[in-house]
Image (cartoon, rainbow, N blue to C red; front, side, top):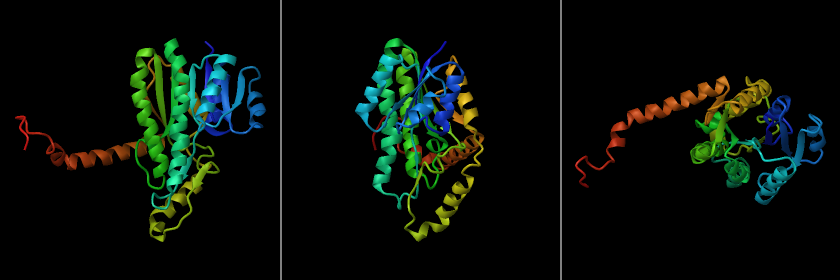
Length: 282
């Protein structure tokens, strides 16, 4: 059965790959872009089934208006893929609060705005699937991308809570924790905070250099990620959390082990904060 997809950020990268895979499967896709000139290019992918629309996800009123327009002109959204986002790279001390606000404005508030816009129709129809874009940095902390990781931790938490809230309505939520894919994320789409504190040179310079060197050579294939997503779309019981990329699995597992090690080492202190079993307060 043909579905209506809404995918934010389809001009390049994973958003474009998701859109192309959905179109190849016979679905209708509304893809959002930031520049008017990108609309004809996107619609040429599948005339009559690919619809491009301008959208800045940080403008709440525009997000609501665009979703209403889609519902009126194309149809109710069956599948949302909230893909629009970017990354800030830099140490916490060297990065500004404005960097943090901008990161959350797009990755968190923009994601939630689009989710909230499609939810009423999905809830009323008792069907729908929401995909949020997370990262391995949203399931384990990584140095040098604290603001980006924090935004993805937020997306993971919101998605997991949302999944439980809307499950009774037949609406599914899946958060995609992505590893390193060959997109522009680590290239032109990344905001790199200028270096200002030499004390961080030995910690951070190798991280930045390695990421730059890896750009264009990542292990993750966007087309394969898109095929994996379509498998989840067709699944009867889709996952709430889906990790994509072998590097992501390894890094997340290492982070989880560090957490478990801390919990084990300090378990006695952890339990010491409970009231005594007798119920008395001391």
